[in-house]
Amino acid sequence: MTASFLTPLPLIQAPMAGVSTPELAAAVSNAGALGSLGIGASSPDQAQRMIRRTRELTDKPFNVNLFCHAPALRNTARESAWIERLRPEFMRFGAQPPCELHEIYRTFINNAGMLDVLLAERPAVVSFHFGLPDSAALLALNQVGIITLACATCVSEAELIASVGINFIVAQGEEAGGHRGIFDPQARDERLSTRELVRAIRRVTDVPVIAAGGMMDGEDIALALATGAVAAQLGTAFILCPESAADEGYRATLASERARRTVLTRTLSGRLARGIANRLTLLPDQEEMADYPVAYDLAKALHRIASQQNCQEYAAHWAGTGAQRARPMPAGRLVATLAEEIRSAQRQI
Ligand SMILES: Cc1cc2nc3c(=O)[nH]c(=O)nc-3n(C[C@H](O)[C@H](O)[C@H](O)COP(=O)(O)O)c2cc1C
Image (cartoon, rainbow, N blue to C red; front, top):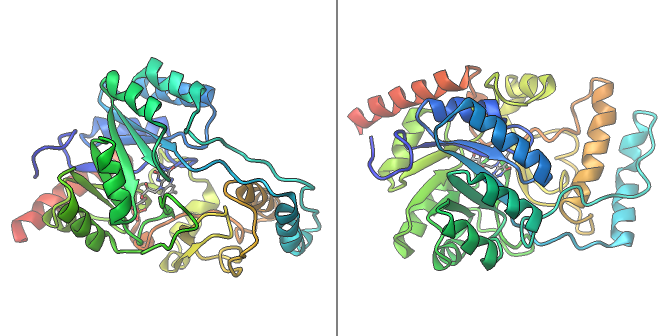
């Protein structure tokens, strides 16, 4: 298929905080691709438990993914205004919004507790989203032989990643489900397609590129490899696997006609992300909303209340533009199917 990737198959199951599980990552790794855990929203203890559980299920390499966003800028006035903006939505369910919001998880930057877990557990691969870790953490991970990946949404982010010695660049196109990995959420987002971005990054660096965004079958992957990517990272394609943590509401929405419409929105979490359109994603983006991930605290509270009344209109149903092509099958079988489809597409390219 292709040489020079970490696993026999040039395929990564994307880290998906809240959706990927040890069972999913292990099944993917056991099938010859690279499984991933998304621990960006986990405490060090939770992360350690997930890594250890994955190790019980596979002796193959897997990836552990961290968030490297700037810490939230707390602003009580803005947060109160955001609570008030969503108050009418809570009232539709006879509920009141919380009085205050919390920074529900910490960045990996200068996060000694999380670094200690990684150094103790030594997963084969560690990847970063929303930016880069502090240089001391990166050095420590390098020194114990961990392979590193970081996500870029544009050429200048890719150049930064290359300059600090990260081993692979994940080129995340605008088709991708979940959060845009853009480093500075205030900067202009170029929103290049996966294909355009892979090509643009390859022009400026020799660091191998992994394509991410909108790929759902082996033909999509073969095309990305033909563009010069060494592997493809697929997230949405794995959400309907029985091993994922997606709940029934998420699975039903993804399997329905609604999966035809995904949108990029800030209103759920405070950062731009692609998900299946619903009432909350379609609220106009607010200039003055709470910062990431503080805004997410409010959206999660609203979804909890709404879903108790069987309403999924406030859910973070992250999904890429290929959502309507998601296939419900066990992860090992999905990986084998993708591998066969890649081979068959490559015979025709
Ligand atoms: C449900 C979901 C959760 C995600 N969570 C993360 C995450 O925790 N860390 C990360 O680096 N990327 C995350 N992503 C983005 C993926 O890494 C990847 O860029 C994306 O899934 C590729 O696009 P696709 O979903 O169209 O395959 C997430 C994507 C989805 C769909």
